Length: 141
Image 1 (cartoon, rainbow, N blue to C red):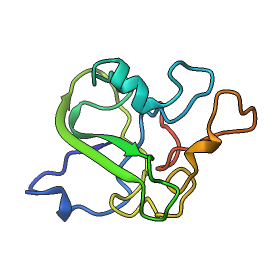
Image 2 (cartoon, rainbow, N blue to C red):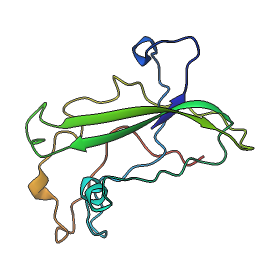
Image 3 (cartoon, helix red, strand yellow):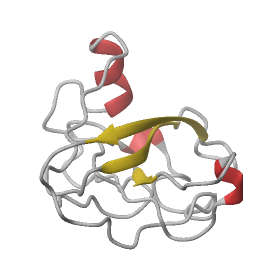
């Protein structure tokens, strides 16, 4: 998830609005091995590569990486969020501004699909299973 880095602000708690834009995600893909993004992250030695859209204008941005633990997500409030933010400086010849995104906090509700869920439903042999990661769609630039 990406947003413009605010100027003159000491903490992100002072910033509100629909400013966070999802640029990457890996929730659950039954055709992949491993199918869960968290398992893929572990298999890669806790390293993740994110491609920032080249069309984005140069400047200072905040990049938020978020892991969602679903091991007790069958109960309201059971999903566990593990966010981490870093400030980055983009260079290049892009000209696009980020579109309207989601507000954080505020984009997620404990009963949203993908937050309140039954893990037993997800199996690579379950042809009808699908998972929708919270936070809206991915913007590709």
